[in-house]
Image (cartoon, rainbow, N blue to C red; front, side, top):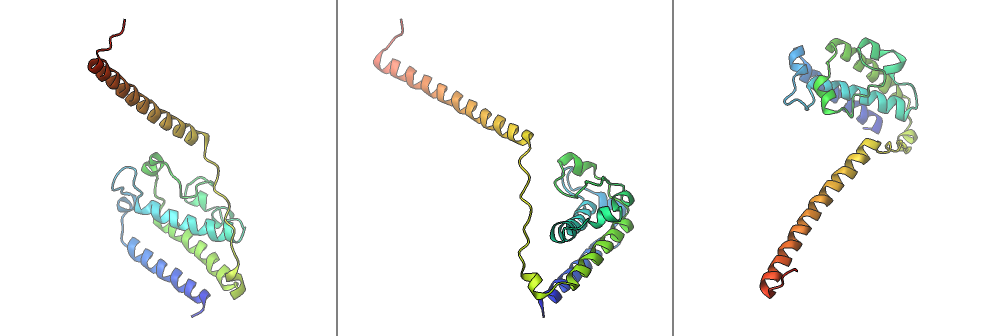
Length: 181
């Protein structure tokens, strides 16, 4: 089996397993969170489809994702910049799962583009290195949180140091009968 065929079979198996998993689930079941900051099944599926679209169409092919090109963000009532990833706990808790038929239609459109791209690849294309964009720099808020966190640990350590130093001084004072004026 050639690499292209292996990839295609893997994509087909993933779709079959996903379809079996989602089959018969109600909107409430797709939206249920095991705990408030845990992803729902609907959010995980949305993330999977957005990831394939972003990776294959935007990063690998350097094309406009199906999400933007066919205006799926309007059909699914989401923001155009919604990548389906890197949500805060609050965003996870408030994520509204779009109608499953609409997400599946978007998934089918993305997969059609993925398979079209795969079909056109040569064995040499499969050996080409894909250069991923570097991760974005840490936002100022994360740097500030880290600084604050470190500062807190230093203050606690300093407090321990002064307590320890006081105990040592007190012990020495008692042992050697040193008294301050």
